[in-house]
Length: 119
Image (cartoon, rainbow, N blue to C red; front, top):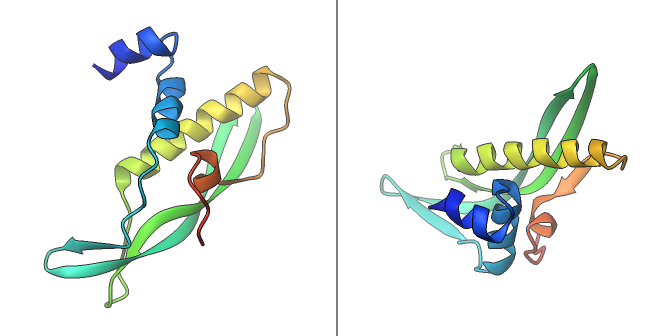
């Protein structure tokens, strides 16, 4: 269904359709989550993504990635979210190269998806 809607509304680009969907969705990130009877509290982390294009290697640090810290020190983040960020970073790097624009060294995830930065 996602691919069909991307074909209709975003010329078949899943990345573009994802961005359009994210721009339309503006809910607040939950402050806490419950997992196995424990409560995790929202915090924001960062991750460095590496993209290799030809012989060039580009690194992009993505900040303000939501994750949850539990009282025992365990940190949990959404694996699907991290995979989606990686895919979007790859797409963004390729678009920058194709359009002869500089590849950013860092991206604030909340700004990137159009959410207010609250940290």
